[in-house]
Image (cartoon, rainbow, N blue to C red; front, side, top):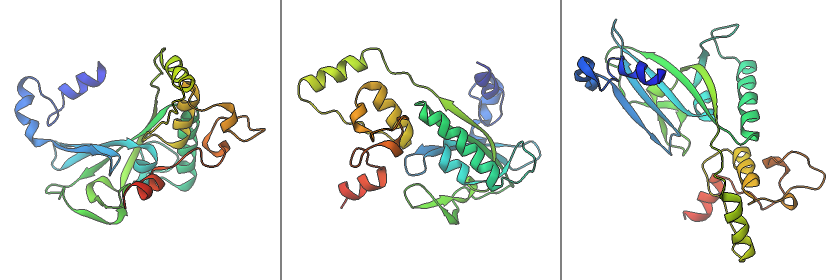
Length: 218
């Protein structure tokens, strides 16, 4: 509710009341699987824009050069690794993670300009306005399994149907969810391993997206 109130009172973002006529001043960059993020730029009173970005934690964090809070304004390697560590802990609990970031842009910023050295998740050129960001926070989102999922998976296996999980989540999030659902069993993991994480899976159990794309798209 608080987030909705903030949106409704923001020029260039609000669809309600007198501010609705200024919605065209805002600029949305929709989510795409190529970028694994989305952004919305709103006009600043003093001119220019502030662009707010959210997306896959590893993708958006890699584009951050500064941090909103911390011992220094610059996002150094120590801070970066600490943030990644928190995100990894969330992933191991089956949570999806998002990084929130922003950047101030000058008047007349080119929203179509491409970065000379930053690439999207699929290898295409990133938008320049979505680089050199300031890290604002990391959040973990839990999407609990429906109660009937485990029973349905069990029935599939009893009927001789193999179940595979295809997801855009990080490997550890995917493994945690698959184990909770009953798709992965204890025998899928290396003997003597305690944690149900991607690194402890036996070979040929998990295939990452880049390998999948190489096998599917010729």
